Amino acid sequence: MSDIEAQLNELIAKLSPEQIKKVLTEVKTNVRTSVDTSRRQNSIRKTELYFANAPRPKDNFEDYLNHSDGIREQVISGVL
Image (cartoon, rainbow, N blue to C red; front, top):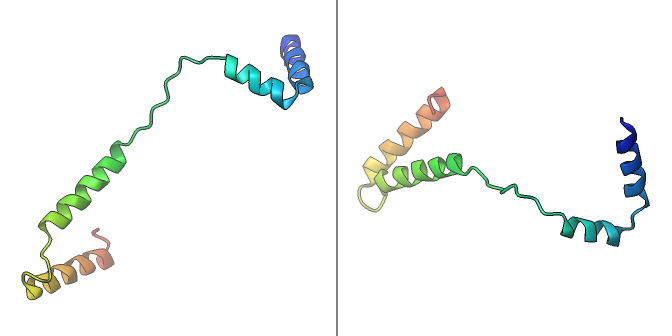
């Protein structure tokens, strides 16, 4: 650690919480915070696609059972 860093650490240690808060409100950063939500969007899109095309039990219960059994078998076998 350099001499300047040691001096800064000593000054920071002497600051009260109110002084630290005031310093942090005065310091401006130009870094824009952004969150990558592409994975979540892809997951939501897949889920919506599945439920838009999956058979519904009220339409044809036999197709619904066959579909759900097929999905269950794929999950157990490790395909999905």
